[in-house]
Each structure stands twice: as structure tokens, then as C-alpha cells.
Image 1 (cartoon, rainbow, N blue to C red):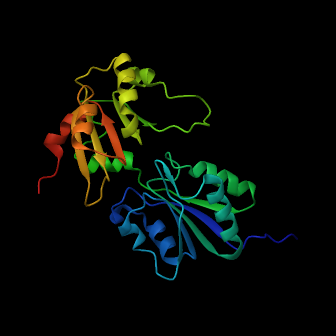
Image 2 (image 1 turned 30 degrees about the vertical axis):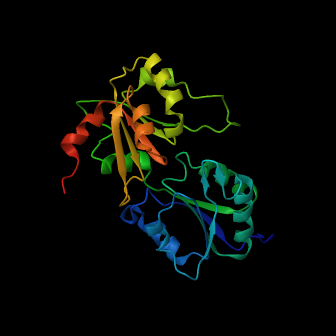
Length: 252
């Protein structure tokens, strides 16, 4: 019988959007018992504080124009760590499979013979709007919602998102990683049938103590970003449900 060359198992754990209260019980347990945690840039300090000091922590985070480790090196690092450690956690912001490259990492690890398990996390496209008082669905406002990335990989399977088709086919649009590309995205949405008066909310650092919002319309938001200096990382929510914020935002 052939013995595996890997001592341990890799867990792709979704850290959620930032609030440690939204981390799953299973994810928290794995962090507390991990040998190694390889984490992303968007994992909040409060989540990182859960990890014991005895655990080896490696930053593999990617941000716009700043890459700590190339993707191939991250996957190779996971493979190497699984050879000598029982519990290897790949900690990813939000959910590993929602625009998080978890599918790529899992496929590569399985191909290399590494045992892998996914622990889902709450994605920011749901949580950030909720904390801002915006329900992404409401039976009096919409019956569809589309989740889409605003920052596409150059090597992907097709050249670009069909924004005009999305504008025509969805009443609410949630855009991940799209703040820098809104000047290009918005004209396509308007060409697809959305009006310049369509509400849009940008939510930065959703669910964290320093969460901020910028509320506008498709016709005003680019100028508002320039005027206020609003920056990524942020989720964009487009559609009539944004108007519910004034009614549902928790009062403090």
C-alpha cells in the first residue's frame, strides 16, 4: 500500500467579510487548532487575533498593484506545508469560492494529491449591504440579483463581462472589486438600459467598525468618488433596493 507523502490536510476557510461574529464556528475551530495559516490581505485584524501566537502565519494577500505571493507560489506553499503539518488553513476573505480563487487552489491541490476541505464563509456581497441597511432582494423592489466581479483576470476564459446584458437582465447588481473600473462599467450599464438616476451604494470595509458608505446615482457616483477620495476595497450595489437604506439603516 502506497503511503501519502502528505501528513496533513488543507482547509480552504472563508473568513467572512470582517466582523468576527460572522465567522463560522467551524472556521473558528480550525483557526484555533491550525499548525499553519496562510491568509489573504482582506482578512480583518479581529479575525487574525483569533489565531494563537503559536501558529505559523504567512501573508499571501493580493491587493490592487500589490501582490505578496503569485497565485502559483501560494498553491505550492500550501502543498509544501501539507507535507509536514496536520492542519493547514488557507484563510480567505469572504467565501473561498466567490471571486476568491478557491476553486483554482482546490483543483491544483487535488491534482497534487493533497486532501482538501472547503469551509464556506459569508460573502461581502451579502453582508456589507445588510450592514448598510440595504436588502439585496425585496419582493416589492426586485426579483433578481446578479453578483459580478468588476476586476477581471487578463488570462480568463473570455475577454470581459457583458455589462449591457447584465443591465437588461437583472434588477439589482452587486459588483465586487469594481470601484476603479466604474468609469468604464457605468456607461455600458446605461447603454444596456439603466438610467443615470439609478441608485448606487459603495460600501467600504463592510461589517467592520470602520465601514463607510458612499450613496449616489450612476450619473453622479464617479464624480463623488473623485471629490471624496473614496477608495477600494468596496462593494457596489446598484438598483432600487439602495433607496431602502434610509428606511432600514439601524439607528444608533
